[in-house]
Amino acid sequence: MLKVGITGGIGSGKSTVCRIFSILGVPVYHADARARFLMQSDPGLKESLLSRFGKETYKEEILDRDYLASRVFGNPGALSDLNALVHPAVIRDAQAWFDSQNTTYVIKEAALLFESGAFHLLDLVIGVSAPQPLRVLRAMKRDGKTREEILRRMKAQIPEEMKMLLCQEVLFNDERQLLIPQVLRLHQKFLSQTGFASRPGPVEFTP
Image 1 (cartoon, rainbow, N blue to C red):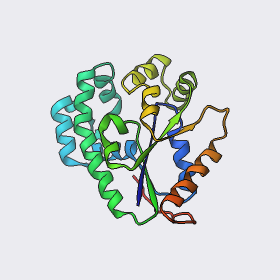
Image 2: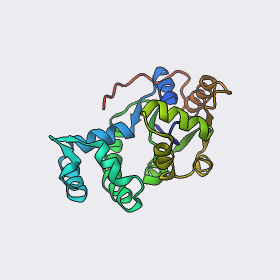
Image 3: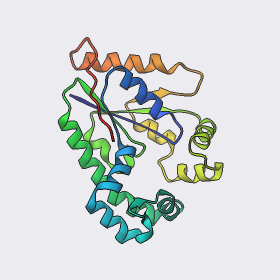
Image 4: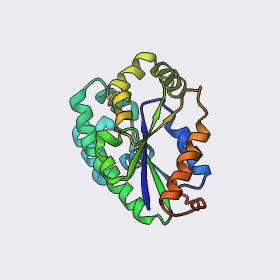
């Protein structure tokens, strides 16, 4: 089974690419969604977060994402501590998910595949690229944040140019090049590499 990663900067369109792969019947693991789930449900991780960031991290047993974001964005040390707690839990969870799949290839979507070291467990990584002004506008519309807030979050990630150089494949989601044909090309390439001529069957996975 081929293990494929998908990554890209904020607002690049990773989720759109993953929806296309899902329509094609490819199982997709969404690392960011699973991270939120584990931060809410994993007792050991919750205890570690409370110890590091304080009782305000959870409000009536519910993760206060705004509070946590206020503690880590713009604070490299705090962000590093958060990643050191969350990334290992997500990597373990993803590995268990990989082991449960029975298909020609699977996809793990994550913004921080390289930053977390999770790319070491994958066979290849697809980068999703878009110009920064377009990414900023998409993220502002999606998240309801200011331009300054989005730019601050972007600075916490590897620059997109460097990230794309680390990827084996790159998809361009710049609203000039058609995205679906690019995805279909990779889909057929992966099926060919694994010796299958038909698409893999769908596997349901709900965070």
